[in-house]
Image 1 (cartoon, rainbow, N blue to C red):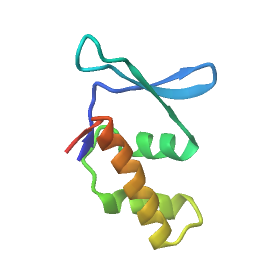
Image 2: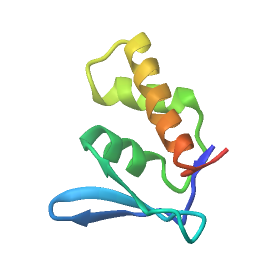
Image 3: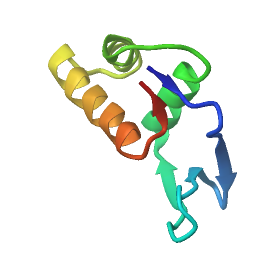
Image 4: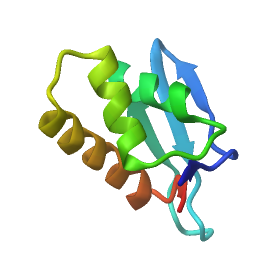
Length: 89
């Protein structure tokens, strides 16, 4: 999977956000705020293909978490991006 290149992180009022444009004229734009961990993962993985295990590894390297916790967090992060159609899977 890969983060679609049309999405960029923008800093607005000291927040790191991604704007997701609605697909139809009536759809609203979604604003996704990235916390420190999400921003770290985004910056580490943008512009390259990755798998769940890559996210798990990054979380374990950067934070003091065991593999089961890192896997749970990685799956949640990936699922959130999938739900918002930010990933090219």
